[in-house]
Image (cartoon, rainbow, N blue to C red):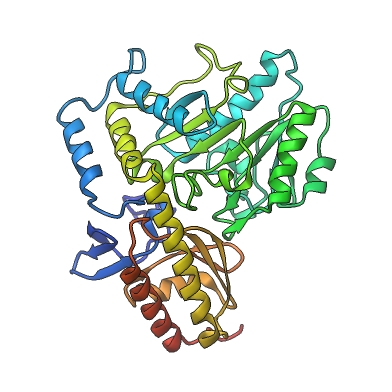
Length: 395
């Protein structure tokens, strides 16, 4: 038998973490890494944060799982907290971001069905998006690497150019249910949408009785310096998917919606075996205990500004490799002039963990608890690695 016990769908690197502490990961042989990947924007409190650790330990000793057939005091409390903190009136808990997006898609379609318009079942989505890897979410993208070999894709999605409001408006027809997008594209290369675009989609949704559905799986939960990125655009969505950082490393996601948008989500229309389990709810509460306050959000904005400034100051010293910095808060991307994936792999040998993205961008997604010393260490090691890096020879 030649296949590995773990299905070989990941090109796994030699980095093999066995322990984490703060902003650092440690490998099997004691190797130390500065973790500016955070499990791809998941470990927003770093590793072993005392508030999160204690909440999980205490809840694990009390109650881990019960069926959603029963009442959920834990879920009700966290849902109410999210309602109080956001635009939403109601919440459905999931175990992951892609499940949250699936729920968001179903909620949008069900809204129109509820109002006697089942033909309004198509979501306008955008180029280079990443919404997950289920059949529905790969059908919502135009990225060949996501969809190759999985035909036939699901109907009900129409892809147009990202950040092009005119293209989005032109795509509206009698079948349109709404818009689905990341306000800041993550996998697509850390590309924040313009205010003109986001505000324009909100206007179009209002004018045509469409739903604005945001995927804030990566950009949410304080990552950009506000609790959710859409706050910086001066709009609210009708439906939003959130996950990654919301559990601080414990699997948790949620679909948030207004009362209007959730009108069709009645008993029997959706469900989850594990979604909203007491252990996940404890993790979510602990994360919000730390991040959902003005002081912490200001810290994220300050660290984001300092990290961006340090990177921009470094770029001229290595302008054969680096082009520019983009993103919001501590969701930053370093645009490269060479293959970002090869460089990200190279950095691991220098004790730095980052994440590659589209458009030759290196994602920089540190824990939100970083301090100035961690920024200095990161930029120093990055600069040293850049000095030693040999560009791959052209084919």
